[in-house]
Image 1 (tube, rainbow over the protein chains, first blue to last red):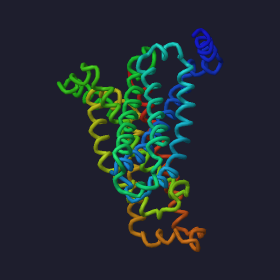
Image 2: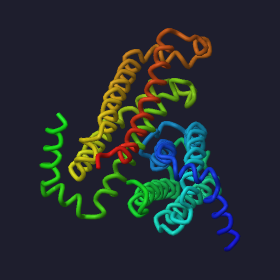
Image 3: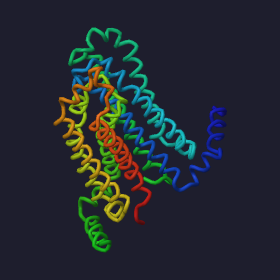
Image 4: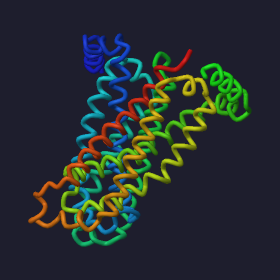
Length: 169
Length: 176
């Protein structure tokens, strides 16, 4: 545990973290990039989730849609994670003490786990149903769960701004 | 103008609806969460169509089909944005109405709506020529129409990003 705290302190005390804290423009700038990236992550994943629910893109085979959309999602996720990390290190101790921040991290992990479980276990028979407008129940459940998790991620993200005293809303 | 807006903000802030939004702690973050989720839908729809025009997404699907799948979603979701945005303004009138960043965001929004409508309309009306885009023989040909579409798509990407940046910046430029 103390090794973890050392690592956090190392990042929080770095010159980079200091610049983000002290510079008036840097924090909002990184935050804006974070918002743009999160919006694209959530929006692009929603396209897949709605397909799994049989509500949109129903004439596209699931694997073709996944292959087209995931590069967009992962690209945006890389930007969101990097910008999020930079925001985090500027006030790491305070973020870690914030319940909404911790919940957000766990929810993102849960969304990732949901995706891995769906791809690994549920979707082995994908070729058999991927052209059907309405996928089987387990695929619809994975899609619905993903939507709920990402809504919760965004809500937690917004709530962090209202529960960290020194940050602007 | 500023004095009139200031008076209007004061009046708005004194309404009972504004009072409720101000005093019930969960309302503003909830409205902001719905607002940003709606932004995610509108932004991603526009971006995916722009990416398709720039040949970065679903190149194997004719553009009119991609447009028909994504762009119509934008219009009803814009109404949710209008509603949640209006309630946020009623709750904290000075935050936006006396803030030049807010007007920049609205100006960019008008441009984005026009760009999206033009793209949606022109792609739908020249659907046949875009459908041909798929065949190998014509796929490589870059016509004037395609160049124009790519310019509009790039502009759309930049303007939508500008809207999101301005939206975040409202929090940092609000009047005291």
